[in-house]
Image (cartoon, rainbow, N blue to C red):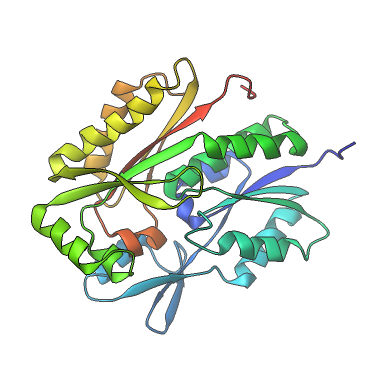
Amino acid sequence: METAGKIAVLTDSCCDLPQEYFKKYPIFCLPLVVTCGERTYRDNIDITVEEVYDRQKTENFKTSLPRLQDVNDTLDAIARQGYTQVISLTIAECLSGTNNLIRLAAQQRDDLDVAVFDSKSASLGEGALAVQVAQYAQRGVPFHRLKPLTERLVRDNRVFFSLDTLEYLKRGGRIGRVTAMAGSLLQIKPILSFDPEDGVISSVAKVRGRRGVQERLIRLVTDLAEQHPGEKYNLVVCDGNVPEEGAALEQALTDALPRAGRVIHGKIDATLAVHLGPHLLGVGIQFLKSELPG
């Protein structure tokens, strides 16, 4: 029989959750790392997303793995607060080795039982998973049940986001020069998503001009909702330094899908801003199967 334990959720600074969720739920956040030249910064501790936006116009930022010391410090903080079991949900493994680093650190602990999952997402796609799992833990769902529930939530979680420019993906080597130039000249705004099977980012739609972006994002989410009639769901909205557009997107999304159990609106983090640049808009939906705890 499984020994009852106190369960925490470990995520990273790419989750883009507003601070209120860390206060309300047993969620711990590992800072990811941004570099520029010889300088290294911990996301949202040593550098803010606003600083990245301002400096990336003339400076070349990169990202790297979290510091092992930060991983161990975060696990120590979890243990000090009396938690004995951990669900880890961090940025998609195809984008970062963060999950593997946590696995290696967890293997050295005899005070914590850590289950590491690939979120196959990022930003509030990852954040929504952390909140829902933490809510289940808070409601008393035991660890042995929480692990398969987490796997199911990952499968039933989709986010879509649009970039204002392909320039920063090109800088990071994520896109070819010709493609980036064509996108700029034609003012084509790609809408991207994480593949639910492997977490790889791919283009799911293209919109000419920024005015059609919100409409297409909402259409993508509502189409998914129509494929899951009667299912409960949560919604997420994210923006990259465009709070007014983000607020308008949230209003339009909740008007289209008024039955959401929760709507989380956050701003993009410094780590993602390095690769995606400013003016991002994103939406997502998280389906909750009826047999899951309420």
